[in-house]
Image (cartoon, rainbow, N blue to C red; front, top):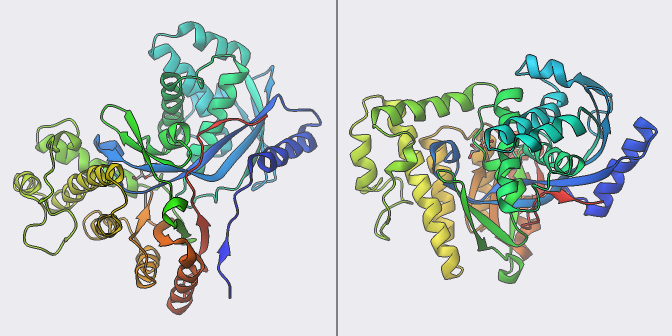
Length: 433
Ligand code: GLA
């Protein structure tokens, strides 16, 4: 059996698919087509809602939406993946949420953006949005696998966000500050209208990442810095392994991790755990050998000593060391490609998520083990976990062989057949046509 690689649509193809689906469904031309990418996070997992750091890149796999404004409050949504037209009322969603179905994402972004504009001193833009986009017809084409932990939800939110920004002539996507408001709208959509208590990493990645680069995201200040990540120049590829196991961030497990962190922060007397990270993390701090006596570093241990609850101890150990690992990798990226150190950090991140945060599953662990066995420069789960995807940094000429080894390991373990993607850092959300 050969490994199954999921291709990305190039922007013209994605736009064509969304436009044709729109025309077939609504017997009219859309007003435009917008694209927003899925993401993988290189390191810094479950740090965003703790005011820590993350390091995502935008995938070439993206969601394309063809849109047309409606005069009434209806949201009519069709998707290549769910070919039945789904119809929702925006006014109803404004009163009854969280809700399910695609209307919660699409309507959630419209309502979320209106709220964000009002809260940030742009009442005239909020009014323009309400007047110019009372309802919407939407056709969706996607090359981002759904519910795989690659942020298909955030990609949909961001594609809608850049779309309605244009349709209401708000001009937000043209500036970094404006884009941050669109990120915020996606977060409100997800937290309030969909009911998933996620932390903003995914929307930031889809809206702010750059081609050939990774985005250092400081989730305490929401400031960003981009770092070079030109993998082809290094002869490297980032292999994404979709374990094809279910992954649902609204099912309570994700929320439970978040709650444990918030409770621990209270005990430790800070608003967010990220505040406990020292300005300088010294190179001698052990962040990678989880079995060693000096793990975690003393500045982490001294906080853990103040906690009584053993679950909180493990969760905080992960969060603090993971933020520090992310910071260290950012420093390394600026200094050049030290592949041994990259490997140690990526591998340790996975072990910490497995042992201390307990968000991996057997499929993710087997994928990571098999990738390492095939010679990867580091492998780890990516995203929320509980299923979903892992990543492995591999030599480009070893991409297929690594996928083969993982496929083999899955077959032996009796798991579902995994699928693969190759992740070249791509551009952020925007208009295609
Ligand atoms: C999911 C959430 C993000 C983030 C990651 C874990 O992708 O949507 O906000 O918390 O999990 O890093």
